[in-house]
Image (cartoon, rainbow, N blue to C red; front, side, top):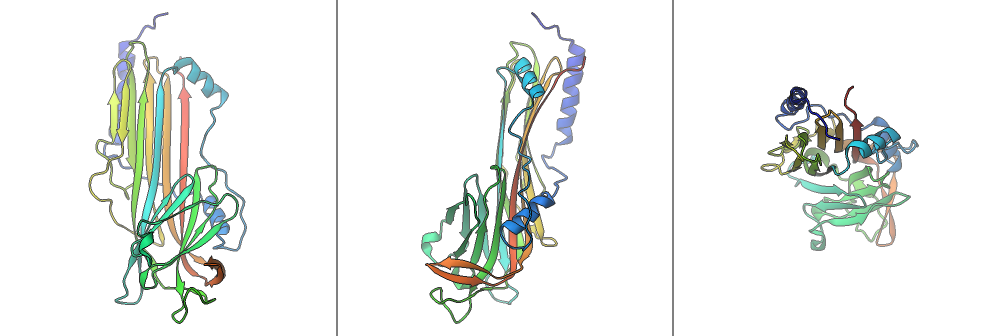
Length: 336
């Protein structure tokens, strides 16, 4: 059966969608919400930075379509494609309150199964490329990464929740002045505090519509928060029969250094697909990653095993790093 197309309505439909795209002309997301407070509370307790216990939060990562969405997908979108993916990382810049004491940085990547930490000046040259470790499956994991001139850190990893929520704590700690790692000595707070952040991200979005020669609309876009440089072009739009679109995050220049304001910093990136048939039926797909860094305190003494020896870890300043991914897919039918 041939579909009769009202060209005026289709033009109006495309014009409205184009207006939406033009509103995002800079590729910048103006408003970026904080990661849900319940997620933060959970990771504070999971890392044992706080003594309270909180339940595992519910992830907003939507894997399953409901029955209505499945029906619309099968009815209108056979042969179409909508794929998007994002990831985000951060480099932490630490400064000492003691004048003349060298600063340092820590680059962090939180992936699906592993964590990478790279000190700017590690004690051992063998760790110049960073230290990579798997996220624990059940209990938290705590490790000591030694840097030159007492610029060392404690890393506390927690299990990943549904491949979409990550929580890691970083605490600047080193052996007390008159001890070595072979003494059962306390790892003291070195006084370094977080001053600046540099975020980095990866993203892509691609889609297509199979319309058997009928005109349709497709848009792929990548938007970022102001803490990241936008990509150019940030969108790909097609208004033809059987349209195909694709965009990859390729920022121009170095990512900006961001000041830590009130002990908090965060950034986000979003990749999306908007597909519209001439009949008005729509398919929208969105994938986003948010990374949040917050200064906190280790309330009580902890411990870490170094070369088989248990060392106490003093309380004090730490940083909690959280990453939250979100996935949305929805379908709507043309208005009658």
